[in-house]
Image (tube, rainbow, N blue to C red):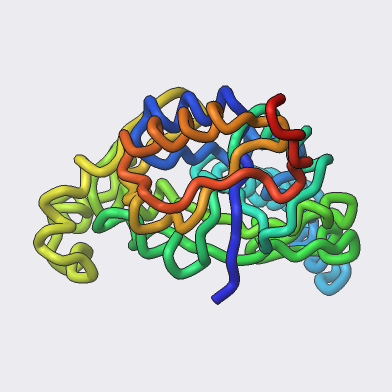
Length: 265
């Protein structure tokens, strides 16, 4: 099973310990400003090329609708970004894990550590890096990023808030089946266990305007932790002690990039 890891800066480690859950942030809030985007004009272009005398206003309206759908997707899909592999680099430590740690897991252990019924709205997959694909019409634009990001080797967890709201009523979006809210209709909730139905709104919370905290079993998911290359033995023990507070009991090690210090220093 492919191992994956997550760099956490010192600040993000503090947040994780305080949250006691896995934070996911909206696609629209990622550092890549084109996250979750693709060519929204493809449908209007296709119609214009194949339908004679089509109304120009109709084409403009189609572009607006497609752009609006893309905007909603960026607002309602939330990401947790991991690195495929366990090879450390100074640049990744500097950019994503400054004075912090690495959490190591596997794809299966990560995706199976979420509390029911969160799995109903979760997907996990490696990102494809391609400028050609990014410029094309995409059904799932969150699966593709520009080639310049290839060094990130990202495995991403994607949580779809719209799907979850329909199933559980969390931050209800007003979907009804007949005269009942969707989450009270047994045909809609048939995919969930009784436990999942009962705790659907208890295993998730809104942290801020751009992020959610999902209930997550760190003890199950995390198989190894590494501290940053400049960490002392005392720093390592401090991290180990603090991680016990969220149930992480796996080995905590020094970074593979750490240079051994002379004895007595």
